[in-house]
Image 1 (cartoon, one colour):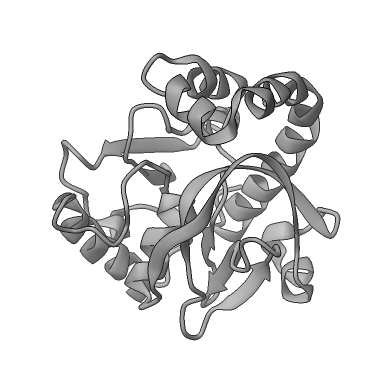
Image 2 (cartoon, rainbow, N blue to C red):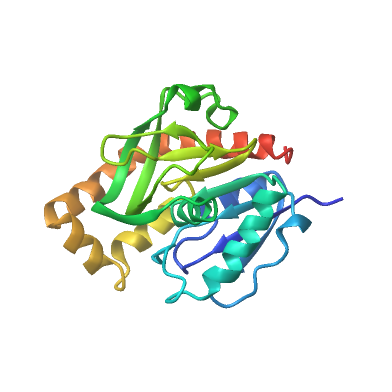
Length: 238
């Protein structure tokens, strides 16, 4: 039987990216659902669920009514103990489904960061092969509290809850690992996005990010691949 992954996409510019390339390498089928325009299918007909980022707020079901259905489907995935990976907004939605508050942060984090792993994170199979930290990419204004019963896997001073595991193989990350070079070019340069990122970072930091991306990408890609291949092993997809 063909192995399949369900991927939920919230905005046009945050998609499977680097992770889609890895899925293709392993010949793993991936159904990408645009949650704004399509109903979320029953997750139990898939082998794993990945939920990507977006500009929406996980706590605003009134403004984003499709979250009601999406959260019901995520709850079903959790109840069925499915392998699950939530990235940025995806991690926030998972936290919300698990009963943790999601709220506005006191800052906006954008750029490449080294996120330290906790002791539990260093021992978790999701991070096997990584050093005591992960090179990640951030673009978020909201954060989640640690859900009741979850294990904290990564933490920073500015954002204490960077990654968690719930149950055996349900993971929420506050950061991006799906970003590839093409996506970052869109995030930095597209006419609908560039003014916002320059306004947040300032011209000097924006130009610095432009310069540092080529230096950061090799380690970021290596760490992202390690984590995602670990997730595929956890999900028994490879």
